[in-house]
Amino acid sequence: MKINTKKILAIIILFTLGIGIGMTIFEKPQLSQATSGNDLVEINSVNPDTNVVTKTAIEKSLYKASKRLKIGTAIKSKNLESESYKAVLNQNFNLVVPEYEMKWYQIQPEINKYNFSVMDKIVEYAKLNDKEIYGHTLLWYRSIPSWVEPYLNSLPEAQRGQALKTILKDFITTIVNRYKDVVKSWDVVNEVLEDFSRAKTPPSIYRTDNIFDKYIGSKDEYNIPEYIKLGFQYAREADSKAKLFYNDYQVEYYNSVEASYGGSIKSENMYNMVSGLIKMGVPIDGVGIQSHVTNSEKLDKQAFTKNNIQNYPLYKTMDAYNKLGLEVKITEMDVAVYQENSTTVNPEKLLEQANTYQNYLLVCILFDNCTSFTVWQFSDNFVWYGKNFPGKKEDYHPNIFDRKYNPKPAYFALLKTLSEN
Ligand code: G3I
Image (cartoon, rainbow, N blue to C red; front, side, top):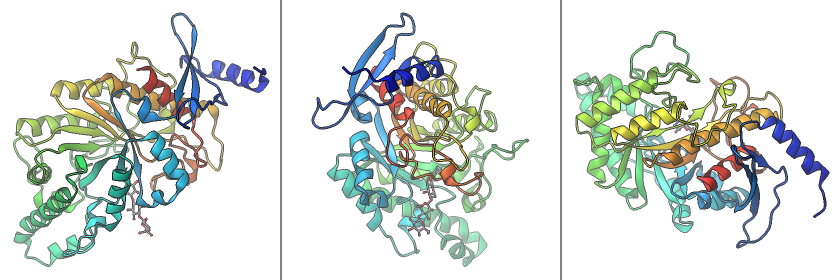
């Protein structure tokens, strides 16, 4: 085999940089067509005890490398018009989440008008390509259609609470009934907990800046607002079999201090809320931990193994929900690597990004109650970061493929972790 000096140099660089990662990725993975046309990639693992390097040639397919977990990605219906996009999607994922097409404001643009045409395109793609659909999301303060508040304001104040319950129940019943044969799990309630990312003294446990809190926010003996319980109740009445989840971000720090923002307060609040819902017999089956790691300065310097990950924040959080008897999903993972005005990214930051992705995935693999691992889009062409993030969308490189659909170190780290555990 011709000696490739470039490759040897790359290995030396990676070895010096990748201390503790315990793996070597050939910069230009050797591909062979041993399988049905899909590429093989050669990933070498270094045994941390013996330092023996073992070569493993595996197919470049995340879901095929997974022994148990569903591997998902958020998609937009528009993405399905791109053949390059669909090639990566088909090869790596067996679960899709509509990035926004299932939300209330998209599905019911007017009080007497439902529009399923765009969502039906995603359903058609999923059925044709044998992909599961995860339902996202039924009740979210940012998904309320623009006609709702004017409609409520047209009624006497005393009637607005019941009116909101009626239209919310109608929406949830209509969409869950329509898709119950293809959607087996739902993000029923999304992001009701206050975000302490920049607050010093915690304000209320729950968000108060929305009409759900205003009109159906009365609290019970567990201090849980009424609308949260109604969301789960309406979804259960519409589908007796679907798995029903609560979904939020910055909630993987239960019993931890090293949160990327705001400490562990929000994580404790989520744990206490779902414990109260269980005690009241509210039909909740699990929680979605979104896993948007948006603080570029807090990425993992180390890739853990199953023998030394027990103190990782997500590990302790996953264990707590496991003990509650709840299912957990990683629902929206991306890992911000901020590099201003640059198309290339510092290789050290890419390795930290790879460590962070693989550590979250490893925790999900190690707990049987964790059932899927989903990224929030897979290419850096599609970044959701908005106006409250400094710089431009192009300055962030949060996903596992670059803008030309080349896999990044994070992709190979996920592939190795799936194939080895
Ligand atoms: O595609 C249309 C375009 O045709 C139209 O011209 C334009 C202006 O109206 O809108 C475009 O659709 C936008 C869509 O993103 C695609 O870019 C929607 O208006 C916009 O609301 C939508 O934003 C989504 C946002 O949730 C709100 O629904 C983002 O894509 C999506 O990434 C983001 O995802 C959320 C999760 O649901 C919950 N967790 C946090 C996550 C990030 O904020």
